[in-house]
Length: 369
Image (cartoon, rainbow, N blue to C red; front, side, top):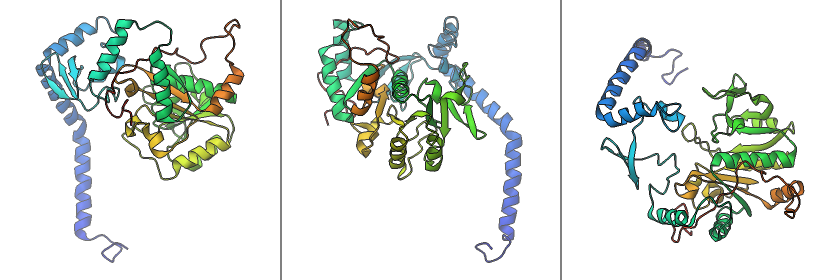
């Protein structure tokens, strides 16, 4: 029965359905040619309005593996990327004289805007005092205390990227649990972490689109379930072979996928019960507040990772661990007297000298909230 009280749709609805089917078939017949035509037209217009960027791209092909400093720049919809001349605040200017409002802000790396004055002053001050010293600075003491105040975890390591921070966190999780696998959610993104280059394909662990397995048996090191699926999570962790769950507070790689009510509580309970380390990657969600989504919603990760915006636009990453994780790690890698030989490469990146801005750059990055 339908809302009209009969088992059949009214004639007008049946006709509308048939018309829609015909139109859909027509769209399917015309779609490839139409899209190609529109792309050709738009790329021609883009070339006409960005001649200097086009010339720079051709020059870049002589020296860079995929034309630009980073391989993904080849995917620019116009056929080549615009070449930036300068950026300030929420605006970017290119070498062809165009000005853009920037809604990406360096994939959130420049969340405070481009060239924020306080960050620029602090960076310039440190550059003038030296950078690659492989020694701590007094500023790092303030940074460590501030990270603890904001995010609640007591012990921190600084890295050069969120990818390195995630790798370090995974390494620690494997060391203290003696387990190999990392559980991630299908469609996730955690930088260049091999274990996270996967998704569910035909019910099994498969590679995300166009990512090469790179000699890694991902079925041996990764486990994948759908985000918000508590039952699947419970089953995946029941085998006792997963070292850690690596997750964002909410998914950000396929648009924004909100977290279901009660999922974080279930995630924390199941990981604790199964002895699985919970790593929360706040790289894209730190904008939720001064302490990120974690502080705003009272999450209790064992390890927290962040990057991009954490240094006001300067490449950097962080990971912090709970006291329990630190104490388990110290049993394996104790803080010994330097006369005892011990590898320096506990994680995947050495800490970098941190700088402190004399005044806060902006909210939410380093404002004293």
